[in-house]
Image (cartoon, rainbow, N blue to C red; front, side, top):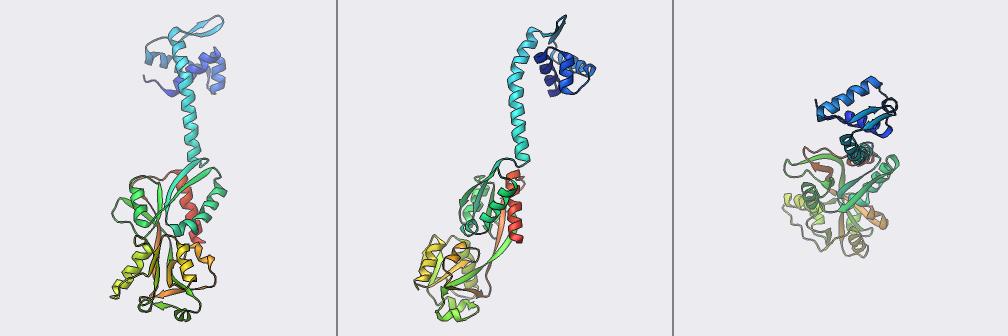
Amino acid sequence: MDVTLKGLRAFLAIARHRSFTRAAGLLHVTQPALTVQIRGLEAALGLRLLDRTPQGVEPTEAGAELARVLEVQLRDLDHTLENVRDLAARRRGTVRLAALPSVASGPLPRAMLRMRGQHPELRVQLQEAVTGRIHDMVRADMVDIGIASGPPPGPDLAREPLFQDRLLAILPADHPLASRRRIPLEALAREHLLLLESNTSVWRVLDDALAAKGLRLSPFQQAVHTSSLIGMAQAGLGIALLPSTAVELRMAPELARRPLQPDLVREIMVVHRAGRSLSPAAEALVEALREVARD
């Protein structure tokens, strides 16, 4: 017969209260059923754990030693199980997230607010990165999920599309190209272009589109931050190419925003390691992201 957790809990209850009757009541079992559990435990261990006396029940020397150890270990086990139940019920937990800067400043805060309203104790640990770096971080288990552009290379990452954003030309309202509803790539290639760094998805989408037309992407100025490019466009240094989700576009309502011809879009996706289950906290964030994307 095997030692069972139920049998150990039954023994500890009797050892604490020195009574089969009281232990049976606390455990919500009948006294005969409790007796069967103790006999099974003693048979599995090959020794006697409890002695019946006129005053009640007393642990044997071996029983007293077992009870002393079980007090600590079962308390630790109960604490661990309670923590796991909290995680499962989304009462606590942290999501390690890597996200594109445009998403981190745009849709993500709304998703985080929605998640906090439903699960106040969940937390998001955010790192901003470009798409390639996000894929690497997910693969290396540095983050639980990533929000990146385009399908990841290789079968080791699972993906779920969230939404599409488009590339916009940001330029002064009095610029000659601002009079057009859409700006052709051929016309754009002749302008002073203000771009994010070359390892970004915005660069890749634009470079691929120009290359398909036999044109070369040659930026006039590059910057790390979207706000820097907007400042340059405000100063009249050129045309900034930015994703429509970038919340920094609100900084300069006086600038014109024009889609390109042809329309250039990015597919924004949640990525995580293939074959690995998401934690309850990560699932809650993904659900909130889906809701924001639908809105």
